[in-house]
Image 1 (cartoon, rainbow, N blue to C red):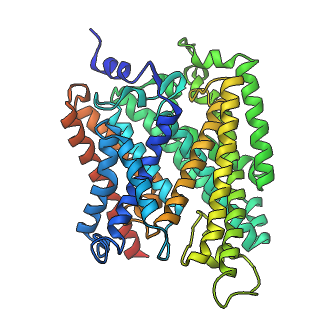
Image 2 (tube, rainbow, N blue to C red; image 1 turned 45 degrees about the vertical axis):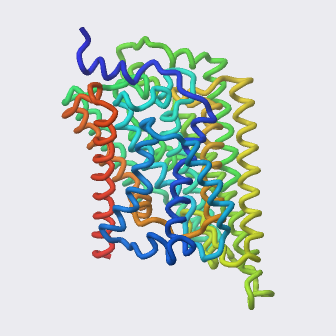
Image 3 (cartoon, rainbow, N blue to C red; image 1 turned 135 degrees about the vertical axis):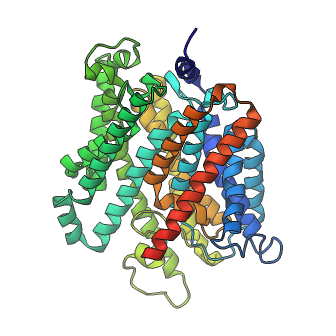
Length: 486
């Protein structure tokens, strides 16, 4: 009879994934929850808004957790339908159209929702309540969890592109100096990620923890992939020096990578069950997928540069339409209007006459999304189906299309029902890596303490909800400590 570890490994192996449409619908659920939360804050609801007075207090944060996190837990455990949430969002957006100032941050809101959903999934997948079609596909396929690592890399590239473009616009000379000396903080982060990756290898081995080897390999893991991408960025900073170079380098790397997978038949090596005795063969998935992830990061960086230009133009146009501002020099509209803070796109829609530029921004994001989906379809049909395991061209284009689409949805939500970002999402967005590390540690501890395979659906809901409550409570507490010490 198989050991418990073998049973757990088999439980998350051999799956075929789900449809692209279902993954997109699930990815849209956080936007719906944010809209519903904003509706309860809106002045049209209960006078000043049901949660309007709820600040960063224990009660207010508990309400945010109940409104934004618990529905995702139920949703990802297969206990709630996405159709009702999507329908609710459409009704809200149609009923209430931008009447107040917006201070939300579309990219940061998406980053936080992505992290929350990922952390729910990494524990939830070990329970029977979690739909097997959401688990990672074994070879070709598009499971919900296949989108996790790719989305983090794509969003990281997008944020880097926005930040670099903002610095270049504000101080071109300073930007050039920063590119000439890329080490320092970035080198420290790469070393920290490398230490986390190696520490995870040692910890899982010492605890005899289950390891789904076909994800990254015997020893490789997500932290090592992130560390390798950091090191590539440090060693070859010119590749992401501008939007044009990032697009060219990303396209070239992706083309060469796909050629190796197709013509060089490396896809068969990645998908084969056999492994040699060396470290390279033992970790073939993690190593052979690296070029694809680097291409994804570079193309995400190029998208960030492009998004900055579009957002800056929208900001300048919106500011020019403000009373008393006509004829003012355009300058850097992004920095003055708050459309870009260097790390994220912000949409400010205060008056009806200012919606035009933001609608144009949204239209351009929608056009980019449509173009990327067409490119994905062409790659998946004519070149090779999606393989997260190999990070092939179809997977890279899927990740770009899905993530640009999600950012566009958050921008649309901001246009339809603007408001401030929940305190919980702010805290998560400001501490992405520590939050994810804590989730991994807590997931490991719970899996060692509890036999998830024997848990009922009700027990799974209780355990995953409690786990998320601990994570969210911890990140908010840490955020308050940082604010007090600053």
